[in-house]
Image (cartoon, rainbow, N blue to C red):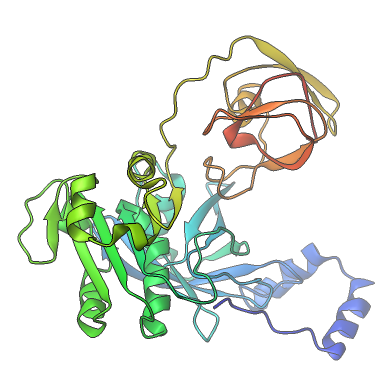
Length: 368
């Protein structure tokens, strides 16, 4: 269930029109936020109102958005932006539960070595901070009607969006069978373990298995080893009938795709690190025209346009560098590009070229 912002009343709309003749939104925001940290003219903001440990090196944040936030569905991401050392840093995080009736949402963040945003958010002193928040996006959501059994495969932090879906199904009384296989290196790295076990005890149609890759299994609901066909066959005998969602690091997702493509009723995946792909035989440079700034550049083939532009001293907006958050998308009126994840070339004009996952094939025009 998505959070729906309050409707604009006719009186409020009239006040906005009148006020708009005398004050600009940035000026209004500056003074309004002296009265309340999330008051704004139209800018979606969220305050961190909860900060709780989730596992080793991970925390769950509770966010209270203002009325301008457009909402999100379980399984979707939101872009969060913080000012860190004077720089706006944007990263994409998955909701770990359906949005609450009071409009609050939770995200679970795992610390990453060198991760500027994750290390910032892991600090308990961040409680009370205000972040910019974007609308929910992503396709790892449940259909409106549940008819088929599900299998969720979670690798490490990939548990976060899948946990939101587990909670959504549990809130519906677990209408169809659901099996969750959850991989982590050690027990201390499992998030939500107690809650998942409690849900499995409460719902006969829900089965959870914790799969360890760095420790020996010791409990009845534990297994060992990396994702492989033997695991899936032993733990999910009716595998061909299952609808499957898999989320985790790129290597984990690639393994799931190799094992399950064309072998299950439905498969959807989402990776939060690059999926390994064969190297592309791109060499040389192309001419790239930046239409808005009027600059002409020579950029290398085989390198993401985002990295190539940054190497030229430019700073396009960017977030996750995974093609998920859409922060770096721009219009491409002309030229051909290649998707670095799949190797597929595209020569049609587009309004949503993602710079972080596409490289130049021919001369280009970009709306930058």
